[in-house]
Amino acid sequence: MTTLDHSPAPVLAPRPDSLEQKRFRRYLLGLSGTTAALLAAGGLALAAAGLLRWAPLVLLVAFPLAVRIADGLSRMCLMTLLRAVPEPPHLAGPKLAPAMAATAVVYPAIVDGQADVDALVECVRANRDVTGRGPAMHLALVDLADSPHEHDPGDAALAAAIRAGLAGLGPGPAPVAVLFRRRLWNPREGHWMAWERKRGKLEEFVALIDGRTDTTFAVDTAEDRAVVERLGAVRYVLTIDLGDRLQPRAARRLVATVAHPDNAAVVDPARGIVVSGFGIARPINVPARPSTWFEWATYPYRIPEGIPSARQAAFGSDEFYGQGVLDTHAYRAVLAGRIPPDSVLSHDRLEGLHLRAAAVTDARLVEAHVGDYLFFRAREHRWVRGDTHVLPWILGRRGLTRLPGAERLCMARDLLSHLYSAALTALFALAWLAAPAGQSGWWTLALLALSAHPIVFTSLMPQLLAVRGVLTGPGEHSVRRIAGAWRRGLRPSGRLAVAETARWLIALAVLADMALVALDAVIRASYRTTVSHRRVLQWTSATRAGRVAPGLGTRLRRLWPASTLALGLGLVAGWLDPVRLRWAGPLLVLWLAIPVLAYRLSQPAPRLPDVSMT
Image (cartoon, rainbow, N blue to C red):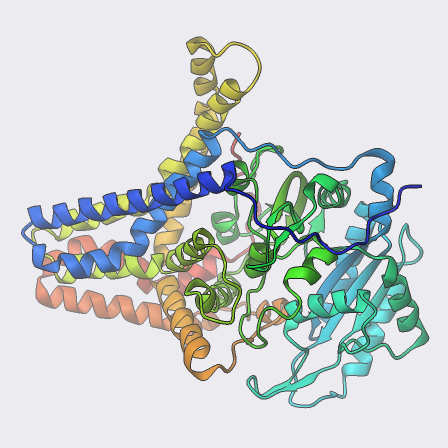
């Protein structure tokens, strides 16, 4: 019988620069060069138009826009032009069974009502059915919602409902259980809450596996103690968020990857990060079928199975989005106690940078998406705040893990990309208010063309992927075969161009509102991270955020700032010169009508186009 090695993650000196690290530096060099070229072209255009005095301000505002365009071009080149780094090996056959038996599938959840209970039970049921036999257990890790009190009157009823719902699933291929955490008083947040939310939950769960008893998990009943006793045999933790569902065999492929000896995590003791191998194996997220036009306009395209992400293909590792298999030994070696309390909301990225994540292309997870615009903007606000909280790591603050410079630059790139909508909105305002009246139209058209870059990049992908398949596959690499592959990609490219144009128009309609959302999130998070150090962990559960009143009145109350901004810009442009409104008018009307558009786009749509990269 094959047994697992439960020794700690190996600690070795860092290895010499690998092919992946060299490619990473070349990618950053290309990103920087393309960004600089775009800004230089903008400076030359301003000089030719006699607006050189505006160049410093315009180029500063345009910096996030240039970074976004350069990043889109770089990712397209990475996915289609570079020869992919070989995928990591995985266990197979009888060697996989012991690793699966040492895997716990966990469902971290914040429960705030019966809707959360139902979502949790359904998530466990769906994923238990598809994972089948193999995992040691399916375990719900539950925090009750924040409260002014340590114990709420409804806590016992919610806990009983969760236990009853999970018990109602009946016998299955693996046992199902639940563990609850106690609330602690958090003076920085101003209420009773579970320690460090999901990040704290995972850290304490790993401590529980180690046999520690000083966690906030409530191990009060015989059933709880029996669950904790079974954790001693757990080495791997597969974490799944509510509403998401693994596809068949995905769990086995994830465990098979992270448990392979050749993928063992190698830790650099000086930096406290994994420098080789993997501490995480994550699935490829694929969207559920959209139900509204807005959901269709924002959900990612279906990429054919077997095609890795741009980062995985080029650099051999990928970003972590919070769902996948963690090696608890590697987690313990590099993350236990490493992130200061009350310092970061979106912890997934930091965990991935510490542990090094592998994206497993044939392990797929169907991800719940957002159909209502108000729910989407609330989630976007939380994501922007979370990415802003990592500023101390980007700046290399003393006392924190010193991440590689290339990774810190990528985090800065992602933070800048959140300011894309604000930058583009500001540039439109400058074109309408500051440029000479005779040039206002040309600058508006130039900005519209730049904002349409996803149409070009996305519509080219099928053809480039088809050509890449010929160049990297067996057989001769003749011009005839390459031309045939290019022609085969024309039809899907045309469909993608039409779909991306519709998405672009919807993105333009919500541009001003998303600019205000991003600015508010960045300012709030920056102040909380650097000055007040309070309310960093502000969180609204998905079900509570999704409780949006269905009427138009709710949209009017929430979205009036964007409409007010559009009205103000229109009044000033008209006062300066009515001619400016010829070019500003169409966009300003869209922004003014954002409450109505958000309402209409969030209504269920019976038929939506189905587009993919092939």
